Length: 262
Image 1 (cartoon, rainbow, N blue to C red):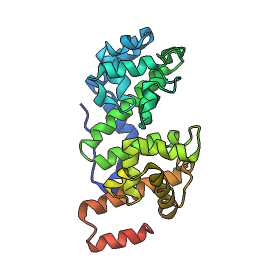
Image 2: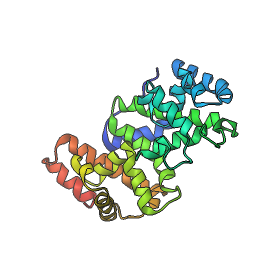
Image 3: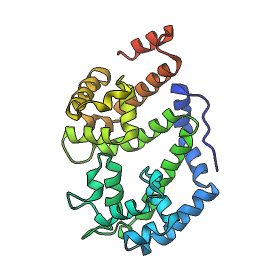
Image 4: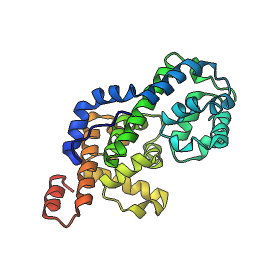
């Protein structure tokens, strides 16, 4: 398996990873096991007609779940099958009960619920799922060396789609809070404590909006679809993460916080 190359942590390491990302992802995607799984998915997914068909083929399920960052559920086949067979059209469908929107996106993409159109029938479906799987897998391998880099890559890839989806500003913030990697990034960037998730959800929303406005200059989540705003968010996250790792008592920490205008 190709191992992502990281020259350092923090902003310097992030800049290198951004410059070399396309080349590294391409090399990673040619890794033997990854290529075997994606080739199998491309060949077999069109023949999948039911949720049971998908979960009974572990290679297919590996790619399907991995594309949405849900690889930890690979052995929960009953749970995954129920989620897929329920679909997303009914309010009480299993996927709609989770605050983590990745479950709903997963079920909706494959379209194996009542009255839904199978995703595999859509042009480019297999290629799109495979691309997501490759990116997520690369992020996981990167995270094995540096978790902050994994989260930054995930946010850069997925956040624009989250904040450009239909719904109110509040619903978009809730979607951000519902995805663990995005929530972790925002909590760190906004200087929120680990216990913040125990606060009343409406109060959390208010704090996210107010701190985002104060620290990042935006309260409308749709603004994070803009490259410069997203870059400011990720840079702030990485800078704060680096400060946390060396201790905020250091003299350099105060300087860095001043530079971040916090």
